[in-house]
Image 1: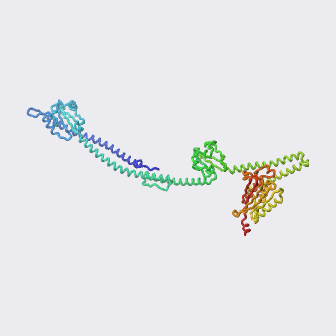
Image 2: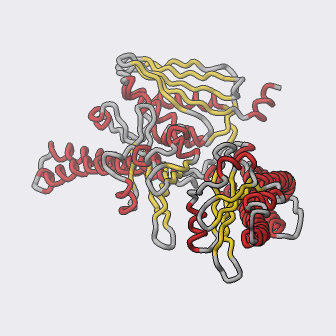
Image 3: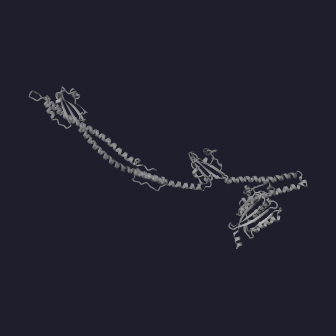
Length: 612
């Protein structure tokens, strides 16, 4: 997770909000305080001026009511004397006007000649003389640009007769200078308060953000899978309770993860040790889980399969959709066979569904049924072959018996031939049934062998002698056998049957004057004997060599039936040699002959005694 920058952190935001709240509060208080203070100072200033005007109006009234003659000073001089006593720092000028709007005097010596004795045009003065009520206004001085308060008050006698007016100009700069000083003091106090507030805000923010930062680090550790770390608890307040709850949550998550991990390992172990392949999808049909057997069956890698649609993974996109797999839920037979390896799979589908009925996905189990299909195919072929092999002699026998029943038995020349054919076909069926019974017993795995330690060289020579004495065709037997005893643990009857089948086939397919070679080679390293019987017959095509040990397999079916073969001799030989822990195989060259090999293990104890 990316680290939060300082300017984006909640720590800075908290301090800023705290400082702004204090600043806004101070500004509201300051605006209210300054406005009230300004109003109060203005009222005080105005009251002071009104008191001075009232005192001055009383003095001027006395001077204006005084009886004058030639010996007394003029009223202008007396008023000037009175105005000279008007001393106030803020008052810039005071004028006295009679009832006829004539200026009788001014406190400004520079305006004496220019204004005294002249009529004033001020509307405030005319209104005061006319109405008899005081008035005032504030305006800017044209020269100094200072704010000036102008006040006009009428001069009245006791009987409320208006005899004149007083015009007063007072500068308000001292008042506003005081306000500036007060604002400066207030601003300084605000700055000091903000600094203290910022420091306190930082300390307060730390008490909140430190546990939150600790919980953030804990959350990062939990995301990495580390549940051992704990959040420090700094108090019993709400944040402390939150930290305690966070620690409890960590503990619960640790327990839940341990349980989930245990279940996951169990599931992984089950999936890994399953012989069947398992594929799981999400609700959109994309593969989210696949085990190793499934990867091996499909011959794909996990990276190329995950998040791909299951219909593409199973290569059934042309015939099925994910919705059809969910709705049908039927087993599918999939053929993944190649030229080198057959592979038939059965895919069984099961949906993953919640209690509410919502479908979360699909589970497909792949079962390798190649062997089952092979066995089933072999079973069908076996039944077909047995049926064919039995039907052929039965049909022949039926035909000849019907002919005999129709009167052929009376013909001395035909009847013996027909009976001879019937007997031959009967013996052929008996051999076929006996071979089938023998194979059936060996397939049942309860077929008993009576093994004894036998000198194989002497045993092999006796069997060859028997065939050599009874052979009716002119073939040559050649023996390439070691002149020593080799002891092998075997069932003489079963190995005799094996050798009889192999030698009989060699004699059947050998041409007149051909050679049959019998050889035994002792393999000391492998502790076994290698037996080979070769002929100079027609041979076997290369494509058929590996199939001669299959049941009912014939290279030339017509010739084999003509010679009385059942097609089971080499299959029985293979089962018996394998039961003796040996191996059997063939090599052949078409037109030049066939060579059958088989091995048998040497009996160690007997052989060591012989060698000693």
